[in-house]
Structure formats: C-alpha cells, structure tokens
Length: 137
Image (cartoon, rainbow, N blue to C red; front, side, top):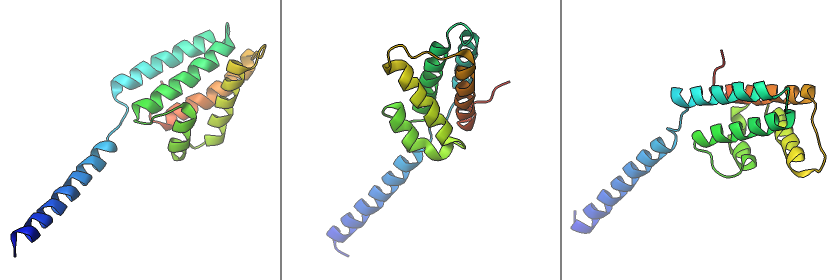
C-alpha cells in the first residue's frame, strides 16, 4: 500500500470515530437532580401564586417548560423546542394549547384568566414536566 492510501484510511477512521463521539455527547443532555430540585421549587411557587395572579402563574409555567427543554439541550423559542421535542410528550396538543394561551395573555390587551382556567392549563404544564423526567412529590 502506498502512503496516500494509508493516510486516506487513517483520516476516514478518525472522522468516523470523531462523529461517533460527537453523536454520543450530543445525546447526553439530561436533567440532573439539582435541575429537578430547582424546577420543582419553581413549580411550587407557580402553584402558590395561581390564586392571586393566574396570568402570571401561567406565564411562569411556560417559562419553566422553556427552561427545562433548554436544560435538555433544545434551542430556539419555546415553539421551536416543542417542535423538536414533540415525541417526548404524551399530550403534545395540550402543551401547545397551554402555550397558545400564554401567547394570548402576552399579546392580547385585556385578556385575563380565571384561577380555574389557569389551573386547568397548569396541569398540562405539570404533565409536560413529568414527561421530561421531573418528578413531583
């Protein structure tokens, strides 16, 4: 074998091994116990404020889901993250409904939620967090 063929084979093997390492590292995003504790603590704060400020509770639940997906390595807006992470959720439509409601709160003047409406959608966010591996006591 001549030197060029050996060099080419070595380069191909190196590229293959590097690709495997990158693939493995890219899939290593997991929620640590520290992350789970933070997410749970934030969730309990959200539930506490729901009676006084249901709009804020829903907005914060949306932010918490966005944060959690970010911890898992998803990038972009929450909409982008939901598109990429869709298969992780058993009720993706419910998560989208909750996110769309959040958008109404953020963008429609005078839109207000009742505590009962907010509680209904907070359940969808909590379910989504559970789907991502956050356990609640």
